[in-house]
Image 1: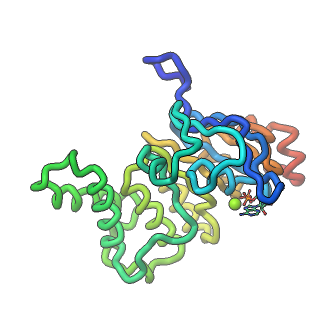
Image 2: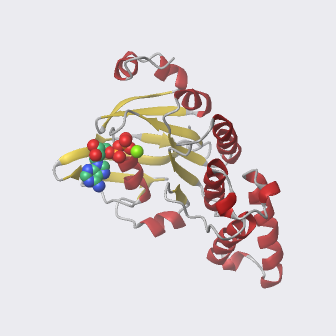
Length: 256
Ligand SMILES: Nc1ncnc2c1ncn2[C@@H]1O[C@H](COP(=O)(O)OP(=O)(O)O)[C@@H](O)[C@H]1O
Ligand SMILES: [Mg+2]
């Protein structure tokens, strides 16, 4: 993706020789990748390929053993997670951030309020409450839980809880969302609703997605990066990845 004003490629994340070892074992091994800004940038690969470790490196949860990470051209290799969050990088954790005893609306409002507090200078005090209320409603609509606004979070289905969790991240209006297997354990109906949500929140953002469901991967991805044993196996559009012999071999049964 080339930005018209600078003529340079706008990368969300770029890594150089990124490596993370655990007691000598390289979970992520010399990964140099470029994830352009915008769209759904999906990372796939067999269990143990290093996908979650790569996410931990990008979000700052883990320091790399070697290599560098750039975000929008800036070297963030040594930035702690909260400073990366301030740059607009948000991560949805599989460990749930939801307050079980609060309603869906209260959960969203708290997240929206926290986001407003972070940008206090941009809002007049008088409009703060109205702004929070309006944004809360917007996020509820965005995650498709408007009708469940009054429901206690603990009474939501598994899929709705996971969507609420994504909503709590979206409330902060991040530039980049890292989603690690957001469809895990979901029914087909919940999967469909969550895929729809991911597609809905993508415009104006970059979604970095780790996902196993190959049909979903093929339908939502702008590009696919394939990892294997800590390294990169292939990068391309869904059509290119489907036609890639090395990827077909790695997935044995094939991608169809
Ligand atoms: N904290 C850790 N300590 C030791 N080994 C780890 C740790 N985290 C991940 N690994 C190992 O690194 C490899 C990659 O794991 P992971 O990044 O979770 O893969 P994926 O998400 O692709 O399934 C696995 O072999 C895993 O056992
Ligand atoms: Mg994983």
